[in-house]
Amino acid sequence: MFTAEKLLQVIAIQTEIARLGVDLGRVMQQVSEATLSLIDADGAAIELAEGDDMVYRASSGIARNFLGLRLARSGSLSGACVAQGETLRCDDSELDPRADKAACRKLGVRSMIVLPLRYGDTTVGVLKAMSARVAAFSETHEGLLALLAGHVAATMFHAARYDADTLFYRATHDEMTDLANRSLFMDRLRGLGSRIGREHLRLGVLIADLDGLKQLNDGLGHRAGDALIVEFARRLRACARKSDLPARLGGDEFAVILDPLDSPEGARSAVERLQSALGAPLMFEGRVLEVRASVGYALMPDDHVDVDALIDLADRRMYEAKHSGRTGGRVERAN
Image 1: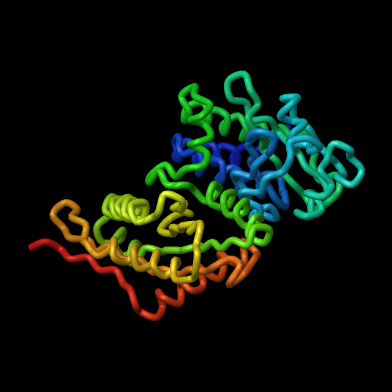
Image 2 (image 1 turned 120 degrees about the vertical axis):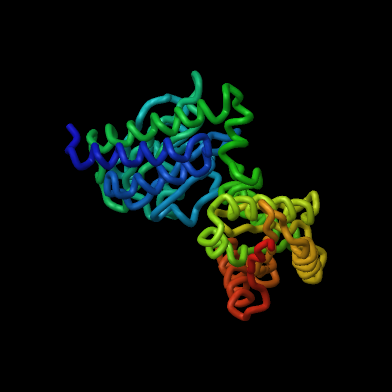
């Protein structure tokens, strides 16, 4: 049924899943990305059922920019998969009454496979593969994806330790820092962004990138780099307001949703609080590590009303700050 090449590819993916352990967010993203090459899909996502919605908690390919997207469970193939607990295939979203046509058109999807992710006795989400082509998938593709879906479900089981609330927490928070992960950050930002125009509100997005992390990893090893990441996350959380959402987007990239903001000065104040919090060095195994970061921010609706454009602008401003040399990272060795 499967070629030796495909089986080896599945084994490699399963090995990487095992390496990631119970870091559910990273496991889901890894599987989403691996799905593309495994079955020649144009996009992939892992959606979790949360209330009446299906939420994109990992995404890749043509679905990459839709992380955190919420769609109604009713009237969708993913919702039907959760309800039935069975693998479902759609050969043409324009003709299949089970498909959410508006969502498929938005993503550019014409065919898909949706596999159930079971946690205990309940289907809590789906692994979805997507194609821009009609009838792109077969039973062989279903079988290959079933091998990955089983590993995601096993990770859910071990990560959550029989607790459904813990399952969703692990899926939306970074394992190392316990901050919100990219999925929860995008989910929250999309939800807040939809209210901005209606309610005449303002919010800010702050993007921060640790300076000198690669040099630190190369010089002192990843244990020192991990210690710096954890300490930066602690300080980021400490200087955020209760209404803000600090997050680790991945690697050395962090972000904060500043909500609410009365004026643009509120964002500048948040940057100043963060830079002030980074002033004290970190002691690590007898060495002094400087905690530095480059920071950029953007405001909605002042700078943009589109969520993705807002993040791109904050990201560009962060890199401008980094390249201008206003901040830098150094390591001082103890005598």
